[in-house]
Amino acid sequence: MNVLLDHLDLFRDGFLGTLALTGASALISLVLGILIAGCRVSPVPPLRAFGTAWVTLLRNTPLTLLFLVAFFVVPQVLFPGINSFVLAICALGVYTSSFICEAIRSGIGTVALGQAEAARSIGMTFMQSLRIVVLPQATRAVLPPLSSLLIALTKNSAIAGGFNNVDLFNIQKTLSNDGFNILVIFFWITLAYLIITFAISGIFRLLERRLEVAR
Amino acid sequence: MSEVSVPQDAAGAQSTAEKLVVLEGVNKHFGALHVLQDIDLAIAPGEVVVVIGPSGSGKSTLCRTINRLETTDSGSITIDGRPLPQEGKELAKLRSDVGMVFQSFNLFAHKTVLENVVLGQTKVRKIPKAEAEKKAMALLDRVGVGSQSQKYPAQLSGGQQQRVAIARALAMDPKVMLFDEPTSALDPEMINEVLEVMQQLAREGMTMVVVTHEMGFARSAANRVVFMADGRIMEEATPDQFFSNPRSERAKDFLSKILHH
Image (cartoon, rainbow over all chains, first blue to last red):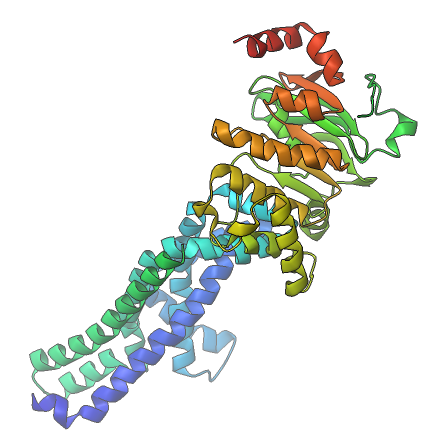
């Protein structure tokens, strides 16, 4: 019990670290996921090919491998001296974007084809029909898988803790190494993760209910 | 109603200039199926062309190729003297001048009736919202659903939804209106309210291409009936000629099946 109270500042830093990693990479993955989903359903073949390649490559690569590339190849080749938080959220964001893209694409599939045809028939461009007509209607179907993906992302962010980032996993390692009772540390770390993941599912349940009313 | 006699070579060189919609040698395949075979069709401004034929004859596909919701394999389609662009902004611009009414209405389900009619004006034509709403309300009143403007499409009957869809298309001030079986998904008692709106449009001089099974509408509103079967235009004639004295065997067969029951 004292482990928590004696190291409250450490736990707080870890909690905020995980929160920041999850939040920032969620943002990146959502933006990229929507863009790549747009590519995958676009009428332009090179864009479709790019989207497919992106998803195939990133979805099938182990996240740890992506981290290794991000931390040991990217700084060597592209950006020397880049900080480990940015590298971590890029690896997490890019990885998760491939899954989010597919969730959004399945959501687009639930919108009747006639909706897009009607949008095009009044002169909307492909981008307009996607943004104004199709994606808003796809959102509801996308929310449940999206919440699962963001919860998975929260837990995946622990890998960043092994790569020079301060987060819950990193704190757990530090305290374990200092010889404190592992079970107690695990208990508090797990609770901290649960706070974040429960918050995510709560927010999505709220969004789902909100969109239900709007129909 | 003007008598338009239509010989087979209606799309002749000198008359093409003043035609609004011209299809020349249009072909399309769905896999092995040759759905459109050497289609030549020219439509004059203000003309109402009704396309009829058995199901699977390619009449819906023909209608949808005119604003390129269906691509074609060969042949040319010109609207108001301009060939249909392949893709992108140019095509979008051209589509905004061609109104389309679908069998299944396809109103934007997440927008109110008013927003459905406003959206194209503000997003495509860049008209200020207040002005667009005023025009939308006038159009909704004209098709008789002004009182429903704040409802969502799912709250309306099929006939009301289709009239909103017509208003949505009219809001773009189209040069030509395409109707792809506009009454086929409607309950019988709602068909007339939609046909009346279309009759009124025809009287006001709108250029219309109407794919339909409503022979009454073809008789009363069409300048010309185009009969299709097996992906070909088998016969073109005025409604009087076509219904009283069809020339092709296919047309005789078709009419005998639908007129006596």
